[in-house]
Image (cartoon, rainbow, N blue to C red):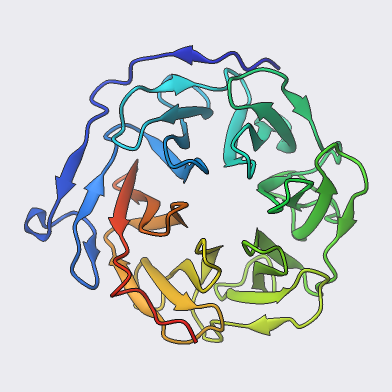
Amino acid sequence: MTGLIRPITLVNVILAIITNALGQEPVPSPSATITQVTRVSQDEPVMSPDGKTILFQSDIDGPFNLFMMDPEGRHVVRLTRHQTSDDGGIWSPDGKQVAFSSTDRATGISEIFVISAVGSGEHQITHDRAFNIHPAWSPDGRSIMYTSTKESKDPRYGHADVWQTYVVSANGKDQHKLAVEGPVNTYGSWSPDGTKILIRRKPSNDSKISQVYAMNSDGTGLTNLTNDSSYNRYPSWSPSGRQIVFTSDRAGHSQILIMNADGSDTKVWVDGPGTLTAPRFTPDGKTILYSRDFENELKIFSVPVPESQAPAAK
């Protein structure tokens, strides 16, 4: 596998300001301007630590690969060029590396890789022969947390029934599992100070209920933050560690919500249509980037988070 960075042109990658008047576009709550960053198939946007580059995945010309662009959706460059499917790209804290998962669609096996931000030095971190996804760097850059199906009888995608969260050192050594009971513990996310971890938990792989939990980084103090009967997922911290953004279907459709780090003062921030996924704060905490799957089209959007309207810290 190689990952040479190459400039490319994506057709109609433009900046479009979306307002409620357009009807079919997602509606923010409270009222705010939503910006559509792209108009081609793109997903899972993550802003670089310096706020200058958005990392994302796209299948514009084949299997999903990783790309980068500026915050206005321009100057797109390609980071990976694989026949496997690459996703879940995430910046290292210093912005010099990107961790991602790469899936062999023929076998349903995925492993975690790291590549430099300029497309060189790609190397494999995990060798589990399972479906490994959702990499997340620790704030000190020394470890990578990820989800794996390695405990399933059949670890292939579409067959696995056990999903657990693991931590491995950035050099691929010293792996251990988070001490959390239950068959499905996914979407691990470290707090900015490294003392807390968010995860999404389900009572079974087929359950239509999932909750956002927080715990200490050593696995103690597990606390249910959402505690309802809906499908909550994609939890992620704000840069201050005082708020958490996540998605939920508690209204009967997909929404993006923000709550305090203790689970209080939950607010709806973006309200459908389509399926809203992978929301993340930008490093300055002023914007949330997210994806929307509507009528089989994946697009990247951003919405501001004015400090005066964000949930109050407790």
